[in-house]
Image (cartoon, rainbow, N blue to C red; front, side):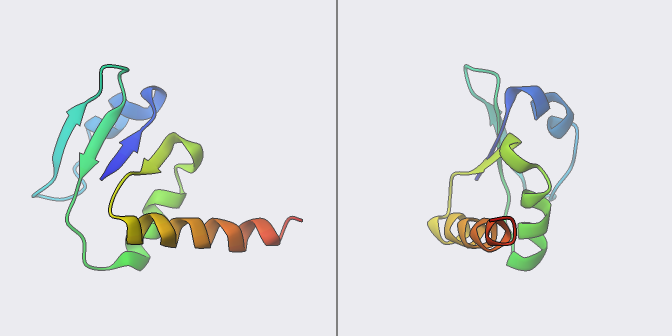
Length: 78
């Protein structure tokens, strides 16, 4: 389950990420997208390209993988 920022939501809502995707909008105008996936590596790259305009809400395992990847990247800049 992915949550996109209000500023990016309209553009993302026009994209088709997966034939079985489910989506809805928050009261704040954020776009929520749920997609099935099997290859975490591909999805990680897709998520990371959106920077702080996206938040992984579930599953916790994917949130943790994103966190780990961001920590590894940040270490290169410290």
